[in-house]
Image 1 (tube, rainbow, N blue to C red):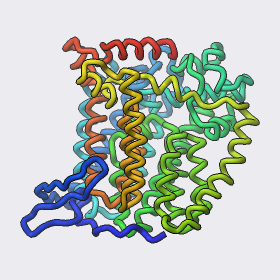
Image 2 (tube, one colour):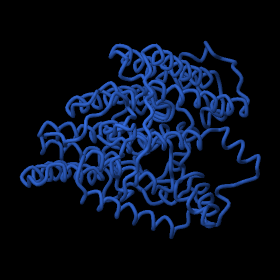
Image 3 (cartoon, rainbow, N blue to C red):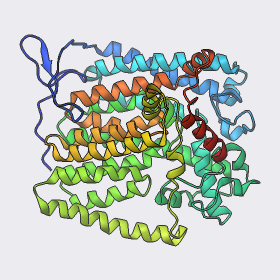
Length: 492
């Protein structure tokens, strides 16, 4: 597919595509506004030395987090104070055993490291065009190797994946109708958290986890970690390939995604299954750009059966090829051709039970956008407000589909709207948006993605929680927040 016409990007990743002689730039229209806004442009160009030093800072930061995580039970690794076997701690445990583990000390230390990594990320972005491919690849590989050695950071989602897999493949119970508590005597029980929540994960992902050697929890654990890290590398390779196909500098696109501290610490460091959704999603984009429309539709369905949120990309694939109705039909035919066997597989393994997306979608996190808006209104993230945000997402998608211009940017804005509507907002959700922002022609979308990254890093810092609790403020202190806390306690 021929790429949408767009002004050439300037020499900087964050620079605007068009500038006036007076040094001001007219930012492109976006779906959230119906007026033009001009801002002064400040050129921030850094050379390769600054970029390499910043990259070393990110690598050292990731290494420090991993060193403290493997050293022993701590708040960095949830549930580790209850059970922390040697196979979870990994081969670096003996090297770093005995490092300080006081919760408050670790909280402030992790917060400082994340802030440093965030600042270094911006330096790498400013120097991206001056960095060689070899430097970028070495930095990415070093970070992935370091993070592979870490136990899951901050959350226990990976053990929940294994819990649902063992529930079905090892204990013969349907993970969409049963809960992890039903395998109370399984060793994974103590390492997981959502004990009373039936699986919210897609059927294809769950079926794939059934293939793990579940007789050994340790082997399954290391296989999932290794495959997730390899999936991250494959995903970044797709970002590179799509950028080349679109005629953009692939170094800038890859750096935009790969050195984001959320991508590193929360997505890779948490070994989340989002990569298994993102690979087919971005693969569908690459296939569409190569005019392999039917295959693009089919591959996108793989992403949908991993995480249903990937369905948001389908209408934008269709508008990308319009007014050529033949190509749009090919995308739909490919999607249907893939969806039918995937649905049959789901019925064969799980009956007509579906992932439990309802319970978790009503839970609130402290600084999810609906809860923040609700706090400003004095009510918190009430059910009525959540429904209003859901309606807003639908309206935003309709408006974006009717607009003209870069379809990748419009898909990015729709993804941003979805993230902003979520009551249960987790930091690594920004990686759904980052590749679309990196590949789009929208300067404003990249700005907003970076702003969202800063917001999520700062609001999820342990130091932020320490400070807020010291002030006696509870972001879930509203009736809606109390209801959410009670439901979360029941589910976990």
